[in-house]
Image (cartoon, rainbow, N blue to C red):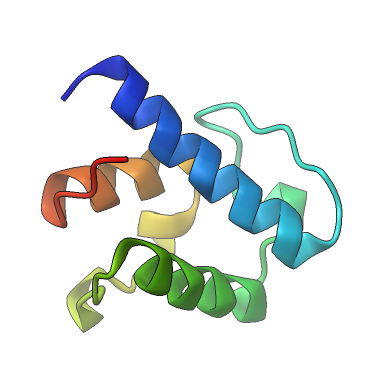
Length: 86
């Protein structure tokens, strides 16, 4: 995978989070998203939005908080396991 593809996935995730949180978020790859306001409800909404946006279904086994704790972990999950390329 090339760097621009990962960046684009990360930009998509950041845009979704900004919309869900109602404010612009500037995230580093390893920022703990809970520090930015990501709680269980927002996480569920984010997962649903990402499934719709990328036309995927995230498996129950992947619905672990550690998979959604940072921008880097989410983008890696989407690109490596689900083949998301944007």
